[in-house]
Image (cartoon, rainbow, N blue to C red; front, side, top):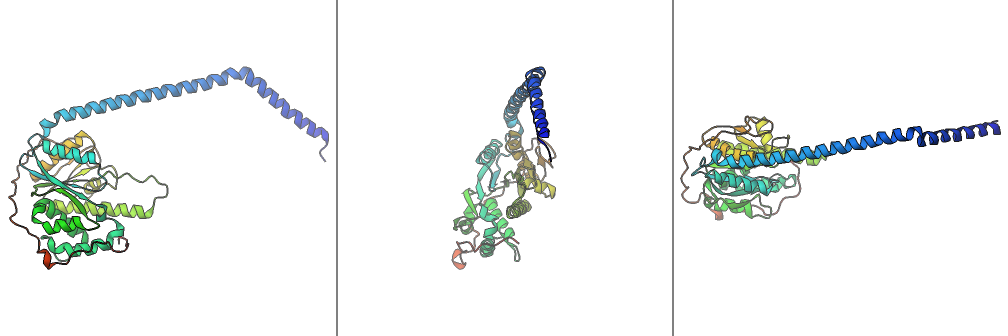
Length: 343
């Protein structure tokens, strides 16, 4: 059995160690510890001030670069698209500021922007799969270029191509069906006239940072990117087409187009003046039967394109409507079918 003397010695040892710690902390080590902590705080304060200064310098440099590109823009793109009609297709998720800036740069280059076709999420949502299939089958008779056996996404792409290339004035029924149901595929602003080129604006898709990503969300994003990539590719086979957006992640349409070596000109970094200036340059290159990839992200051939003047012949207006008579066809169902998943 442990006697009382053992406990007494242990207790004395504890108090002795505590006393030594207090004495050293209040005496010889006090200044040393305080100096170390003060030095670390001073270093952190200095580093923070340096980072703030560097950040301010970078912001000022970026602002000056943006100003420089803005000032040189008329020389690079002025009158390069004079007489050309350009339609803009906007995919879901593109900021309004980028749409407005794109339109302004195209007009600065001399182009007439015929209007906007804004794609709705119905175009790719997994829950609307059955509805899209039925809808595409029913509108195919109004799509002049749709062939027997065309799948859902191809029919929708060809329908969009007809509207932006020919103008909605010759596709009254088709535009009504694409925009007028309870679950519209798209909304239209303008687009009355035929276009010689199409610019597709794609969103910047940020990679997921979740440690356990939602598999349904990942599958939806992959399907959306694949579908929109196929849409742009189809538009590219029908005439001059430029895809503009971001290209710094696998979910970006522009990045996917570049990786798959699709014959469609691309532009990235459209949130900057350099990207917006590159859009008219790419359009002019396409109209001259060229191919170019411009910007700062992966797959770009050049940071800034060369001044290029479009020489393509502008097509004349299409005479009369080309829609199949509406009364002879069945209207697509307005309500979406029950939820279904993409296969």
